[in-house]
Length: 423
Image (cartoon, rainbow, N blue to C red; front, side, top):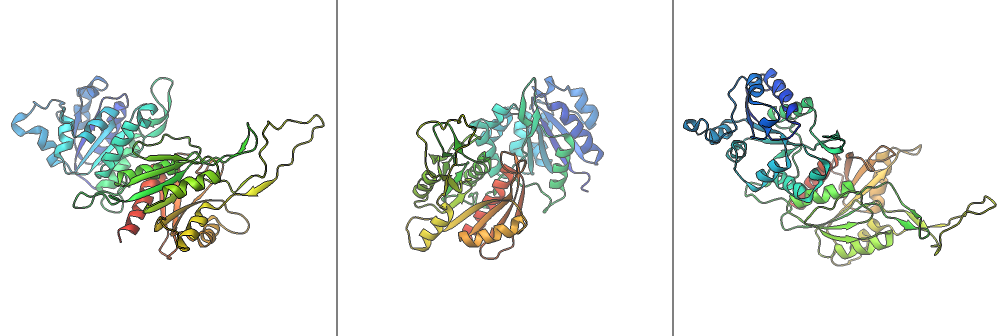
């Protein structure tokens, strides 16, 4: 375990500041030297005496304190790690824009140490496009932005935006301090030494969401896909510098700002929209959950229940296989299709084979370069905020396992894509 590291613990002005006091105690018990830098609003939630008593160090929020030591620069320069918990929407925005209107903001600008930010705010604020864009910007610079937890917030609200528990934050800090191989995955591939992002100048097409096949004016055949994983891939590709074309079926997640959006409600409509979006693109990520079947006939009026208690017989026909069709078109010499096509496979195991057995067979059938495989079920993958994906490669490369929040999985997949494109 790393000991006697110099850590700056930044605390911004949210109710979750009380949890930072427990994080501070854990850091001190692990032997670290911790300077607490609160914002003025943070001191309205937890007072200076608490921070000084737990850290054993003087605490100030004022840029003009300890001017003789150039404190607003020194703290950042001397730090081995900067942790901000909680990081409010306001603090994230200022950090992304490089605004230096407080001691904490100055410290963030002056430091070249790794930075961990743990956002905490109401769900609407966390999901707002401005906040998502600020997070993407920070992650693209190499900042580790930890996904907030879901749960009870202030008042009666509940949802994503809760500050993770102090022990979880402490574990993330220790992973960073313990060196390569243990660092939590930052948000998307970091810029290279020249400052360029790994997908700069590339165009990425992402399909996402679940198709809905109409049965009558009221009913449809659909699936449990929320579109969250495809949205996360799109966000990560944006953060990595790509131009992103998002083709959406039914979604239960906000669309990130900065994408070129088109829609495909049914499998047939999605096929046409994806084919149009692929023109001149470098990569296609087929994350949409496309229905395998659709009703053979559409009833123009709502299908009624019969007095005799009988049920209608609904004949199904197969939908086009969008992924395999695009790969076949490319092989036949069709122009404008990407050189790298990534499929998604939502699989379940059965008596005939495991999830990966079925996935490997699917990779051969589809013919794409990469296949991202996840096991699905009522409480797995669909609609959830976490995911586990195994990326299989047609060239026989070792499988890559990605797990964590869907944003972290999306970032990991974009890193794999960037490696392939930049070989």
